[in-house]
Length: 77
Length: 355
Image 1 (tube, rainbow over the protein chains, first blue to last red):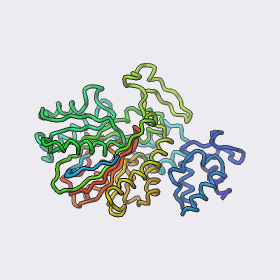
Image 2 (image 1 turned 180 degrees about the horizontal axis):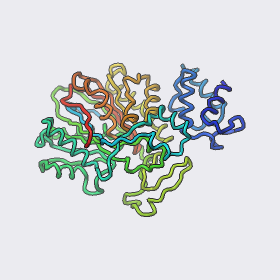
Image 3 (image 1 turned 180 degrees about the vertical axis):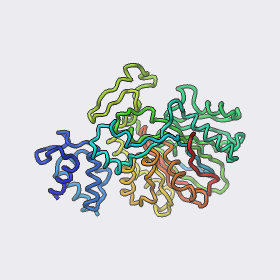
Image 4 (image 1 turned 90 degrees about the vertical axis):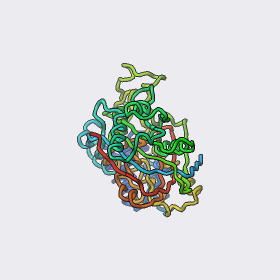
């Protein structure tokens, strides 16, 4: 999952090296439109629908937080 | 707040959209999107085409055009109108109310209630609520509910958050007394603490428009916007909608003792495709029962978007069937409102172009 999400992030922002970042949002690497794109890709790839209520900046600050969000949704379905 | 109305019905819906169509592809260079991001967002959000008024066209022009269409086609008689309720956030003037302008230009009778309501995306159910309340009066038998906005004129051309979605339009809904002993259920909710999430900061009495309020400034997302322009705090509005709307609908259906499966269509305000799909997923409602195609075809015209969704997608069904419809609006205020209505066959249900 780690590699898939890193690839998705790189597809979203080809100009950024996410592996070097500690916090995507604090460093300004993702904006709200990037997050919307990312959510749509995660929904498609993992066959889930991430809850609108969970589309919060904190859940997209790192690869680990994104993995946690996907696993939470997978656990609920 | 839970609301109930007895012996009221909707008998016709007409929407009027400006003929001028603007395409996202033609405006991409105005926005601070990366090219690949633009193309992906086009699909996800529904950025495509939107209808906007030509300079100088006002809300009263759109409403009068639609009302004349109804008069000319014998779908409405001037003398039968007992009240005009206009829901708009883009009035012709600060004073007088635009409903008076419409009454005057059409030469409607003096024995008439004219009422303007300042409401945005939740304004269709809010306007219907007001129309239903007026119908409790003995001398009011027919109310014309007008929803109209031309907010494309108040959005910065460099604001990627709002501009690609904003459209203009008007709708006319005829509301009458009914003796079928039916009940319409509704809810209205407000949270003024979120007032600044969707706001035009200048142009009112608090901050009158001036040369200073027209100065474009860059925000952290790269948008250029002035205080005279519409501002939407997109993240906060998104989370507000996803949190409040499912609970509101659950409560509405609970009060009406109606199972979700007994609702034929969920006709919700059309802010963008992504929000609506997320709502449908959360509420476990199919996309067929909750249409989300209006923004991509016409833009988001505020309180007009629900009538547009009805007249564009379902006019044949509304003309030929009885339908159990849940409507919901949500947005500026912040406010969120809903209704559950059993529709009889409508006398008219159509969309026309303003020429």
